[in-house]
Image (cartoon, rainbow, N blue to C red; front, side):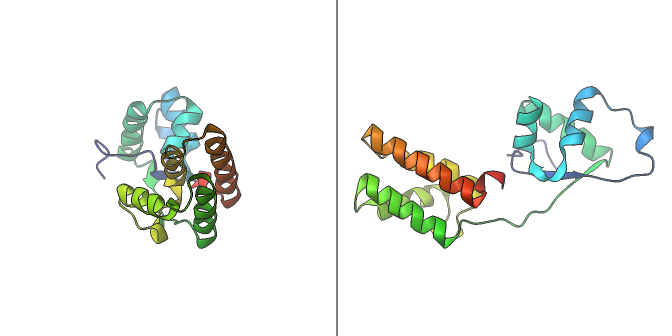
Length: 159
């Protein structure tokens, strides 16, 4: 697997159980990364918890992969559900009026997706972009607050 370029923050890795684990010498940074890789947490979240930039994370992940101490977890992409979409449309309509559907559809297409197959890990970014269309600050703040609560309720921050 080539980790030298491209977006790696959404990738998930897990530790590989090996009998010869004690035969490897890991520096403090490599050990910290190794311990964070639980097969569920993406590299972006792990890097943030450790306090590592993504360039350094890329180097450490490449080295751990070469040593065959970690392996990439193939994830099934999770998409937003109909309940979330309906809530998004309703809240955005309250903030901008009847053009909400069109603005949402346009923004989703700008991401390169269809609304019915919008990845849950990008939903906070979508909400942020949509909020830029709301002119009145109090409506913008209310929209963001309600959507963040819905994102947390759905567990989309953890994907």
